[in-house]
Image (cartoon, rainbow, N blue to C red; front, side, top):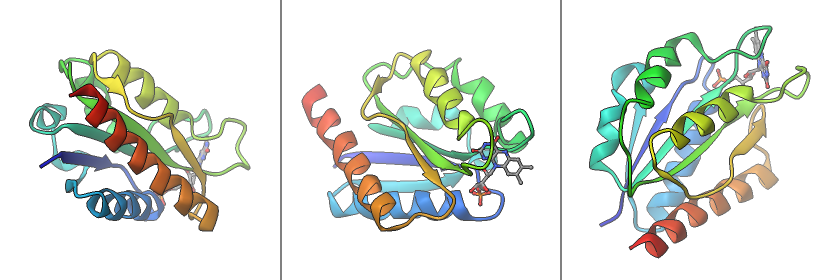
Amino acid sequence: MTKALIVYASMTGTTKGIAELLAEQLRALKVEVLLEECTEVYPTEFLDYNICVMATYTYGSDGALPEEAEDFFYDLEEVNLTGKIFGVLGSGDLIYDKFCPAVDDFDKQFEKTQATRGTETLKINLTPEQKDKEDIKQFAKNLVASYSQSL
Ligand SMILES: Cc1cc2nc3c(=O)[nH]c(=O)nc-3n(C[C@H](O)[C@H](O)[C@H](O)COP(=O)(O)O)c2cc1C
């Protein structure tokens, strides 16, 4: 069975909710999913999974990473995830100058692991609306299709 690990950083629950919606969609595609908060897990955990996902919000005046996700972020580049499929999504607020920059930062960090990008990043403005839920569904489908193609 295909296995996915979704790691998330969420201060007020929005990104956690997005991660849960993605887990639901992946499970509907027969993927076994584990959801973990970023302080509870090391990036090496991804080695046991086929699909590796990071869900993050952005915090700080200069569009910084969530503080609690920093260790996970810097440790991630040390892990060789060759053969794995990755995807990054998250929530931000369009009111800020930079929208969801932490999503882009994680996307670039995953590139250093040699994992294969299974889908483009998905950036959601605050709480997901119907269109965003469709995008999450497509995000899940893309990840699974990329994994199937990689076999
Ligand atoms: C102090 C502060 C700074 C923020 N900076 C940004 C930012 O630079 N870019 C952005 O897109 N969103 C920014 N946000 C918005 C959050 O990322 C957004 O509210 C997100 O949905 C929070 O996710 P969470 O509920 O999972 O914690 C900021 C929020 C706060 C409170």
